[in-house]
Length: 144
Image 1 (tube, rainbow, N blue to C red):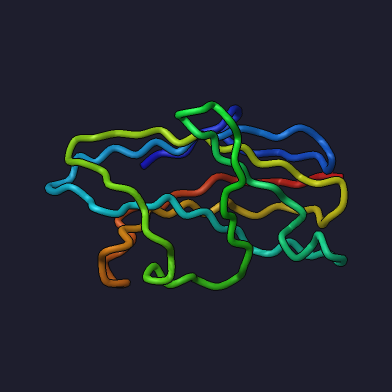
Image 2: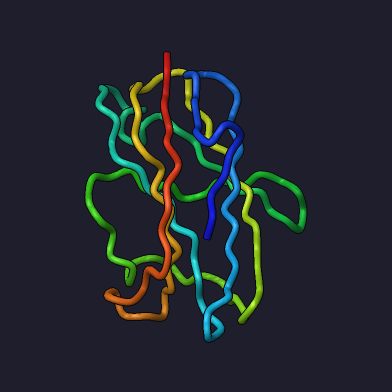
């Protein structure tokens, strides 16, 4: 798994345009995965007000079939989410690859600061101790 974006980091001005990034997954492992999921999480930025609850950010995923941007789950919390609680993923055959396009936008109101966007590949059929075969991150900075 590999995550990339222009400039190697995400810088979001409050109320500005979204910044795109991709997550590339290649299964060169020894088996197919029946249910694999890209899970995104970041820690809480310090701030006040209702937008601070979700860091005042909006995450969207591009639907490859239609080209439309759809809301995507971004977990904002300072703890680890057990892999067994994630919803089912999608199959990934042996030697298969996929690229998932996302974009992240900062609403006009909300906290500022820096925190990494944590990206985990979760095998939702595996026990928690074996469910995360890969993880990576992208640095995110939200500015006024």
